[in-house]
Image 1 (cartoon, rainbow, N blue to C red):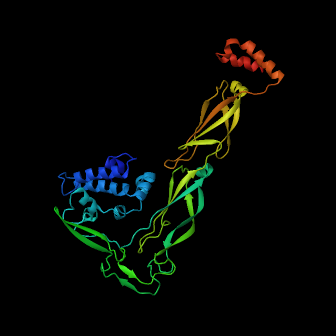
Image 2 (image 1 turned 60 degrees about the vertical axis):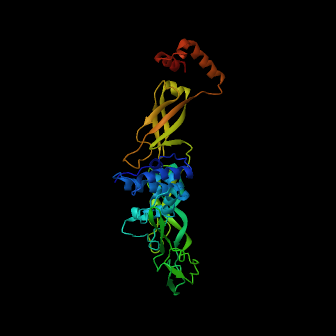
Image 3 (image 1 turned 30 degrees about the vertical axis):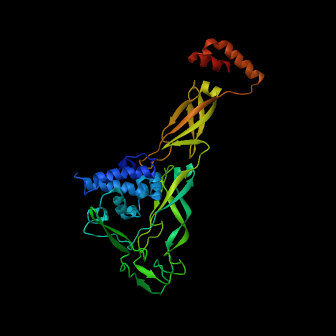
Length: 381
């Protein structure tokens, strides 16, 4: 399956475009690719693409989710959910062209006059939870318990919205379908649109005795503790999906999912870039000059780093395989250790005397160090 194009790219607008600019761009493209006008062979598919982009970017909630998570933020939305609350028929009338004698939704949801099922099962919304963990947690992986509050099916009425045992009447306006069809005559022909029934609000039924527990909503706010398994190697922005732990669906529809968005606390020693870690350590003037071994911390244990003689400040050493585990590949990243030579702030009289002696025998080699310089330093100390 071809990867979806960015919605802003589809409409040809910048990410900072306002509602007026988005609508203007859509109008131009919709007129170009409308199946009743365009002679291009792929006009219908392009029309669907630009209409979907407009349906998301013209809805503030969907746009906010898309801007934050991209197409992944649209997971859980059916095609009908995406186009919900967008009255394309009115838009096309405003633009000055019709719907081809039938509902525009036939283009998106199939022909043959089939209308939207307003009172059918509907999937519950996904829930997003910001979860903060430590770098050590991200390295090792951890099972975290979080408390999430979301809409769940009312246990008293089982989502029916009516008081248990009470009568539920079929809506006389829509005949239980939850929708009404309106046909308007225009100079371009008839335009048909399907809308939720205004009498039953799309439910297809009339409830005279609402459930006392949920007050006729069919759901209640409920808090639960949920275990989230965080694998080793997660990074800032990683999303951990827990199926079925989002909000309950309507009319026996499936529940949405829970997404834990990972945020990693700042570490006092390590900086992270992908699977690599970065560490800065101080070494003494003597260590830099003469070389030696020093203990280096990692996220699991201390390891020994060999400092070669003559190491300069700001030198970086690579310790292979001592970084973070990779989520996508086997193995680990690297640990990069940057050393800083520390100049002593206070010296004893003996130390000063030795350094002055060292300076006198070094001459220009202090400015242009070489192997002889370090040999003399070793002798002087």
